Length: 115
Image (tube, rainbow, N blue to C red; front, side):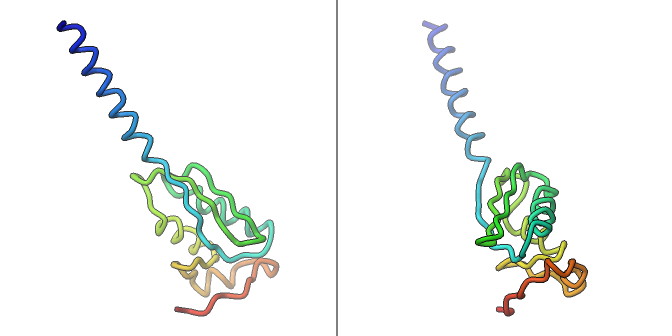
């Protein structure tokens, strides 16, 4: 009987820990302004440089960055700040004029109006 109780306790602990760790990975979509393949490389590299980001894919057609990250290590706002630092505006983080002006000509997108 004692063995069954211990095995039951271990099973509950195992399944409880599994559900805790399963909720750590999060996938979000972020609007990131850009134009071309160079933008894609720069945006994805900036997003992946943030600790906790495991995957980043930017699609130029809809200007959307899909990012998968550990939400205990980072946040969407930190990812947006990293992307803005390399010259690409998001809906919530604006790049500095200096970073934007340093982009190659093909990467200069129409900047959204300030909110």
